[in-house]
Structures are given as C-alpha cells and as structure tokens.
Length: 105
Image (cartoon, rainbow, N blue to C red; front, side, top):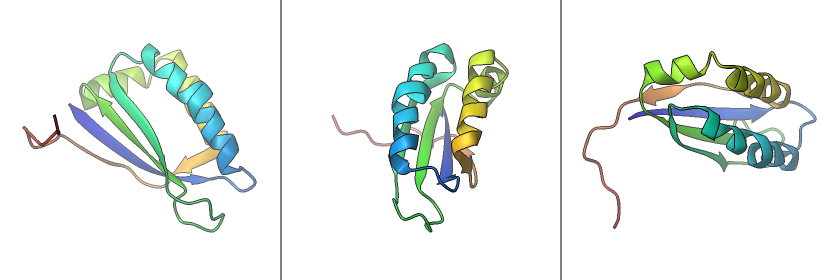
C-alpha cells in the first residue's frame, strides 16, 4: 500500500462549498475508474480565505507505480484539469506504511 497526502489551497473566488460539492459529485465518483486507488478521502481544514491550507486529501493506492499509470488515463486527466480550476496542491507527502500499523477492531 502506498499513501499520498496532498495539502490543498482553494483558488481565489472558489468557495469551500463549491469545492466540497465537486469532491462529492465528481472526485469521489471517479475513483472506481482508477484501479490503483483502494481508498480516497478529502478533509476540511479551514474555511478562512487566508488560510495556507483549506483541505487535504489522502490517497491509498496499491503502489506508487500503479497510481502513476492511473494518472495517464483519461478519467484522471479530466479530474486533474477540473481540480486545477478550483484549487492547487500545496505539497506532496507520500510513502509506504510501516506494517502492521494499528486499526481498531
């Protein structure tokens, strides 16, 4: 499993509500078309227009290489273009977990 975290900043004039609607209606809905994605969530950080980060997303992928292959398919390229009109990724943090980790039963 490979985990990717992207802090996200909204573009000027884009409301958090508009971005959240796009996440729910488009971003989440496209995930089944990306074979490498096991899980994906977007988290709200701040509604303050001046905040350095408004959201962050976590992508759980089968591997970095598989996710990079998915980045080449049409569905992902469309998502990327739509996302770029709404927000920007501030940074990327990614890595593989130290197994076994902890998960409450």
